[in-house]
Length: 374
Image (cartoon, rainbow, N blue to C red; front, side, top):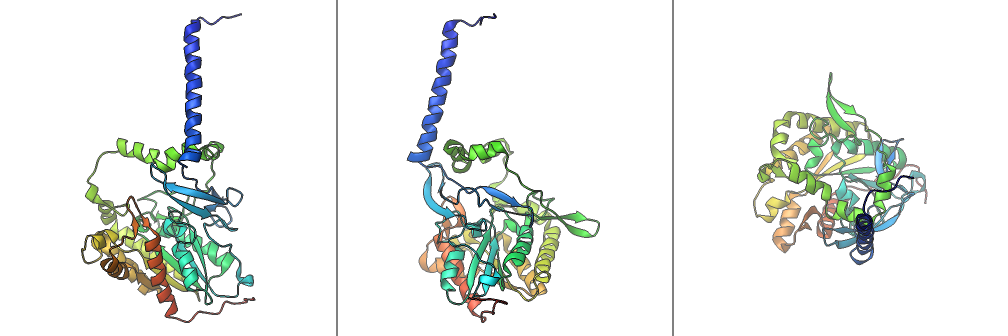
């Protein structure tokens, strides 16, 4: 029998170290689960039928999301019967008595930063009560190109009478595979005939990721402390902070301006052509940094406002710019529309966006949904 050559005292120290480490991790796990709850996010699922990401219906259907290293701003979320963060379940055309407004977008429509019931979708639903139904289809990180793919799903399953796309600044460059590779989203890439669609790569969470998601300590390090981003920023070369605005590299965006313009015209035109008979509205976020600073105009990325407006006019879609209403409201109330350390809309921003959108929708009579029954 082979005996260990390690002195008994040394083996005892290693055992003590192991027990101490396990106990420490257990204490942290309990602390971030019960004392200072780490954020809990819904599990992701890839729909292979429609090539879109949404949330797992078989996973946790309700939870609490927190923000920052001190686990602040606890907000409640709920995953509905179709895998979206929503206060209500969705029904198909045959069971709806009112025409449907479908809001499509990224994390602004996903709205995991505000409490259930405070999103632009929920607020608009209350404002439109009795006239139209309102469903939200938002997924964090989705660019304008993915909105096209999401529209194909929404059209096939829900047949909305009105489509509203919420557009933010990083929706443009992230639609291009050459500028920002996002393999699990539909993107455009240069081909022989110009820009061509690149199909999403199906997403599958490994067993390790699923197990890690159950750990409060891991969730705290990943989502509250943003440890991966911190490590990446430490290792990345330091650049000019003024080069970035709204998660957009201004230099790279300007360098590829021609490609961005081509992609925007193509995507808006495809959305219009694939949805005949549907009212389509693109809503553009406001340049909030300039508004807070009291600076006029649309700021560093004003040309994106003009680009989207031009694409809408060319394709016969409505364009709604939030710049003026957000500026007027801030000059009146001096209440910011986003969180101090998070540029997403807060409840005030969501409410104002819903108010502006409600006014725009009420300018036209509500269409009658086909084959509807009470």
